[in-house]
Each structure stands twice: as structure tokens, then as C-alpha cells.
Length: 247
Image (cartoon, rainbow, N blue to C red):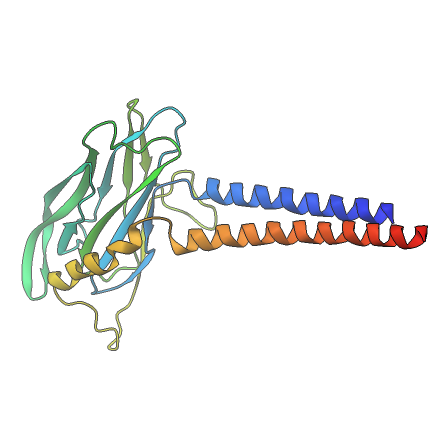
């Protein structure tokens, strides 16, 4: 019986240790600048939220610059204000005019830069911040690469601009939006006002921990409690049998 108990405790301990590494590994894998959502429908307006964690242990993130495409540009881009940060939008002349909703445009937004107003607003080690833009119409392409450049308070600049080739993920992957074809049933937003309404209605989703993050942590906690309960049951059974033998 004691041998069975030792095996149960060892198995439970190994499970908890594996759970710890799994959770830690998931955190490490996602510790780079990403965009949410990762896909959008061609012709629609979409809310793009860039999640920026600070990976440094000694410096804070003071600036984020995101490059938008100019070969297949967004016709409209608006920025959601972030308290303590100043957003700067720059435009560039297009090589060729693009027609958007029947109007020809010759220039488009090519970069959006967020800069911390002071040290208190900067993203400290172990923290992250979200930066959101409304953009559209989404061009009819397979995917849109959105290179991001993260500046730290010690002057270090990390360029998240590498594109994955095959199944291997690059060391510093660029945020990428996969584009799906628009169907007749999609109907999507057809003007800039609809896109800005998305910011108001969906902005709350960018505050606090996302539902997927919360679900992962709740699942991990539930598994841990389950393992502890199993070990406790084995100990109780062992004591019960030991008591019966003594009588």
C-alpha cells in the first residue's frame, strides 16, 4: 500500500510539474508583439489590436511603431486613444492610385506610432499594453504583414518583422493578418463610420485579460486542484485501510 501511495504522489507531483512548465512555456511562446484578430474579410473594416509585452527585465517599452501596407493600402485608418500615450499617423504617396468606394486615393497611412508621454506611462517589465486602430476596407490579398518596431527606455529597438517560412516560427515574427474572400452574405461595413462604431462597441474587449487568457489560467488551476484532490483521496484511503487492519 505504501508503494502505491508513493507512486500516486510521484505521478501527481510530475503532473503538477508538467503543468507548471506548460503554463510557463505558453507564456514564453506568446511573449512578442501580436495582432488580434489574426484574420479579416476582404472589403470589410476591422479593429486591429496590437498586444505589446515588455520582455526586458530592466527597461520599459516607450514606443511602438507599426507599418501599414502601401502597395495594397487601407483606405481609412483611425486610432483609438491610449491614456498616457501620443499617437502619430503618417501618410505616404502611393505608387499607383487606388479606388476605394468609388473614390480614387493617391496617398494612404503608412505608419502609426505610439509614444509614451512619460516614464509612468511606459510599459514596465512584466507588463503589457494594447494599441488599437480601425482600418479598412481590407484589401483583397491573401495576407497582410504588419511589421512592428518596439523601442525600450535603454535605447534598444526590437523589430518584429520576420515572415514565417514553412512550419517554423521565426524568432521575431511580424504581426500578420490573414484575409478571407468576401461572400455575398458577408455584407461587411461599407464606410468609415461603421468602422469607428466597431471601436466603440468592441473597445471594451481590449481592456483587462482576454477571455482566452482567462480560460487558459482557469483550466490550469482546475487541473491543479484535481491532482491535489486525487492525492488527498489516496492518502485518506490509505489511512482508512490502516485503521481497519489495526482492529
